[in-house]
Every structure is written in structure tokens, then in C-alpha cells.
Length: 134
Image (cartoon, rainbow, N blue to C red; front, side, top):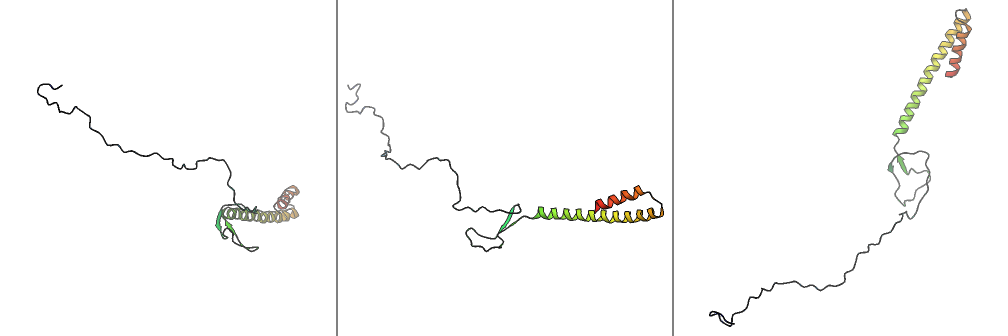
């Protein structure tokens, strides 16, 4: 079908070929994705008991290290215990001051009672305070 002087040898419109990369599909190893619920435990456990509780601030023995009886293995934070000790010492000092005052009051009222300047009830109340302070 040549029309209007076109050559019969003309090529028809053909789309241009595009390059495509081809890859061969092969089975690939899959990562192990099993899920399990469990509990992690140490290989060896030691049930230890302590007389004091507190935050561990220093560990002197390494895991698996041999230790001797009486050897210090760890130190705990002792600030709470130091504070309690100071408070107890202050309580003792206050109680001693009350005792000194009660002894002085008993001696004073004992002398006044002997001279007849105070009542037996006042002396008995002072004696009761002294016994309470002791």
C-alpha cells in the first residue's frame, strides 16, 4: 500500500525496546524467628541471708572467686544506719539530762519536805518522775 510517493520499503512504527534486568529466583535461607516464653535463670544460685538490708555499694569478690570464712564480700550503704545511730545517741543524751534534772528535783524537794516547806504529795510526784526517768 504505498501512498503518495512513499516508498514501499518504509518500516512501520514499532515502539523502541527497553532494557530489563532479569533475575533468577532461588530459595533463600530464612532467619530463625521462633518465639518462646520462658524464664532465664543462672546456672548456679546461692541462697544468702543478711542481717542488714541496704543498697550494695561495693563488691569485693568476683563471680566464681574462692573466699575464706569471715572475709568481707561486699559493702552496703550505711548512711541510714549512721543517721539512726545519731538519733539514738541524741535520745540517750536527752534521757540522761531528764534523769539529772529529776535527781536534782528529788534532792531539793526531799530537803524541803524534811524542813516542812513542801507537802508529801509534791515529794511523791517528784519521786515518781525520778523513777520514770531511771
